[in-house]
Length: 612
Image (cartoon, rainbow, N blue to C red):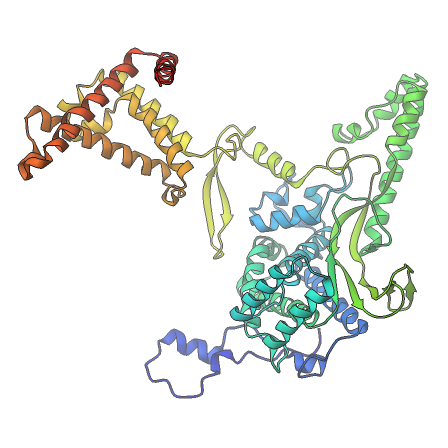
């Protein structure tokens, strides 16, 4: 990674004596400086400012150093031990039962695919080599999406706004002209330095977020390795910080270059593309090929016997299999020769992407070379891939780093070839509560790194708001109170407590109508966890207001008329017309069925239209 990074001096930048008494926390911060160490890029690359452009050798070697740093980090922290070796019970437990962060699961879905029959999702986290490449792929996705996709990583707010405006304005323009404008803005942002103003702030923030993404797995690995999270966590954080700083500096170098760069990641489950991809671990692919070759050889023996109706021999051979899961891998067997040939063709296997480890990097450089030249940059060879055109040199600085598995050639990725991660997590939730019938408390990590829990019910549809669950319980409570205490008195004769407890059933229906109307209108105060109680408050407030109007009418009190005679029309509206309309509506709902109410409303609308 180069020389040892120098220590940060941001906390000591003010040399003048403070004009106020600092707190003890500030004194400790200044004395010990808890911020991560920063890489001195001027010493690492031997320059104090960026040249007009960098050559291919610089980009290739720096990108290789970044890749080696990520692999070394994931190997030291997430590799080396089998999780199955130190569990304290004999049950078959999946490491995915540990509550990983949502971001970790999202990235794992994007970079990994199981090798069905050989390496399942459980094995991916259990085995140190597979776990290492999974974490490398996740780290690479964080770098690609949060650093390489930026116009200038760490740019100050004015320059970032200018870059965004320029990129939007020249969205449809020619690529090199558009990049030249961005390059000039990036150069202005750097001034005479190597990195933008907000570079280290962005690295600090992203390092903290990355630590949180890996924190559950890091804690799990500490249980097996004997590491102390409190002591070794600082080293873990520092290494992530340094790798992200390397990636951020590499993006700055791309931003100040007039060349156009394209970053492309492989797709898990996709067929191999030798011209785009390179092996990250040949041994894992060889192991997958050997397993499936042995399995297919045994299947062909069974299939050939089955196609010739020699079922007795098939039964004897199948008895030697260990369990039902292994038996299922050989089924179904063909009943005749034609089926045997067709099934043998469908079971053909070839290399497919299991882990999208590191993205491909391609450089497009404007040159008057007379033709388009695609050059594969390799430490030993430089291969000219040819092509026709003018003015562009295409250099493949690094191909996609992938780990292959021997998958079914004629099968989509998420069918016979393997199941998505969501299916495996769903199976865990289903088995945890005896079929997923009962709800349970699901633990998860919050943004500040603390553990939180929430009620989770596997059978509850994700898109269905929990408001309706509380609403159903309120209806149940209404019928229980009615069965226990009988029909309540009229609203005007109830106390405030009785009004809230013994609400008419029509108001429970109005809860749903009110909630639907407010959600459609987009009021933000209904977006929280207490949405049900918010609608209850609105509905009960209206109910108490109506009760108050009834009491005023009963006692012949005209509050608005006592203020001014000109306000008597408000007393008529609130004390007579509105209560009468509510009473008529309540009576209609008691006597008419919902279908009858709809029919009556339709008749009134039809009569009104015909009159018009």
